Amino acid sequence: MGIAVSPRSAPVIFVKLALQLKEAVAMTARSSSFRRITAGVGAILLAGAAGAGIIFDGDGSGEPGFVPPPRPKAPPPPPANISGGETLIPYPGPPAQPQSRSEKKNPPRPPVMFTKLTSEYGEIDWNARPNDLNNLLNALKAMAEVNYDCENKSFAEIDPDPEKNPILYRSGHFHWHLNAQEKAKLRDYLLRGGTLILNAGMGSKPFYDSALRVMGEVFPETPVQRLAADHAVLHAYYDIDQVQYRPGVRASGYTSSEPWLEGVMIDCRTVCFISRFGMESGWDPYEDDNILAYAPESAQRLGMNLVSYASTIQNWTRQVARRVTYVDAGEATTAGSMAIAQVIYDGEWKTRHVGLSMLLKEFNRKTEIPVKFAGREIRLTDPALLDVPVLYLTGHDRLKLAPPETAALRAYLTGGGMLIAEACCGRQAFDRAFRETMAVVLPGVVPEAPLSGHPLFAMPNTITQLTPTDALRQLTGKSLVEPELLFWKHEGHVAVIYSPRGLAGGWELAQIPYSLGYTDSLLLGENILMFALTR
Image (cartoon, rainbow, N blue to C red; front, side, top):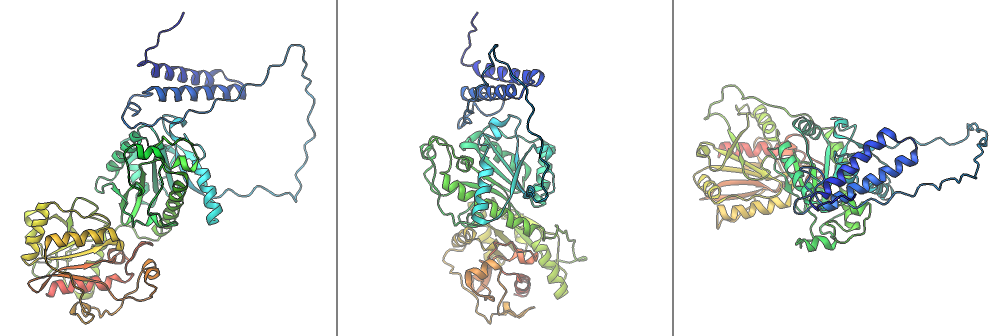
């Protein structure tokens, strides 16, 4: 008797058949060929369900932008049955040959660089392109002469120590979920130096949306942001300004040729990368122009840069001291202390967690002026803004103030307040954004660079030149450089001191490898504070 199946119930039936088949395999399968065949059929049934609609409740397959994983290839046919008239005689095999001492032994396994995270939805989700990482690492070995390995693990098997699993990679088509305990574990892993790469399989939007949501919950204090064109990951191995996309990306309405990568940055380090479009289909080529993915060559270049950036940053992270919290220097009064408040804005406003505190501590040690070490953070619209003598503002990428914030900053600066600002890591994106912002805050004011004999460069340190970071040295070709500062003045008085080069990393004595800044920026920072205090 036939069974009537409605289109709405078809996915459920597919799943039930697949899961029942999987259970039957576990209970009754005795031969390897039977296990291979039934596993393949189960995968095809799940793929059929993916194409038909929802597989599991809440998996995202019924949402707009879902891209189903490719259907697995059909399993190979079973071996031909032996006819009844044939006889199989079990002749013994050849005698075992003892291994000669001169024979080469298997080489040691290379260190694991990538750990591919599995999914509760099975390989159809997390392993739709099974050779993506293997192919990427083989290309890396051929081009950069470095040899790494990869492995597959569930999130429960991940060691919080990044030394054990340096880069976690999760590709998927369906929603990505972590419970509260797993989010805490991921946060700990990333803060200790680990890296996470999240890849929307073939551009599947439900996975991408859930990746943004989960990372926002893991780091609620740090927004997920689109990476600017000058981000180090886009120049770590190849200089990638533009990429090529599959036609499916253009058909979806995206017209830019810039790579679409987003990330979470902690202390100048991008701990998580999220790719809106699929990279895995370029690493393990899949010929379908309708998918939302990078062209193979662009995907390969992005992959090489991701590995290069992550490995370089992890080597640096091992040398960085843990976060330090400082307390107030005695009972400092407002008249005899330097109270600084860091500006909060909608964006990555806190690029370093202890740089300012370490600068104030060193300034107090050298000058014996009581300084408030406990960092204060304030929004420009806070009524207490006018009670703060000095503001500190920094960022990596975008700086966009709302009209009330712009008006408040203008009133603060024209009322006698001072702003100290820097482009953290010397990032060009923030440099452009800051100059544009100041043109609105103080219209008509032209920024000017202080002359070499300016009092700012005289106390408490005599500064004529500074030591550049390796990245800035490569850019300038100089082992010593003159400090770069800009002033915005109001009625002849300095209202804004701005550095287009990175300072806070040097204040922590831990400039990131890609930073365009000064290794001895503590000297310049101390002089800036002294100038602000005595002006």
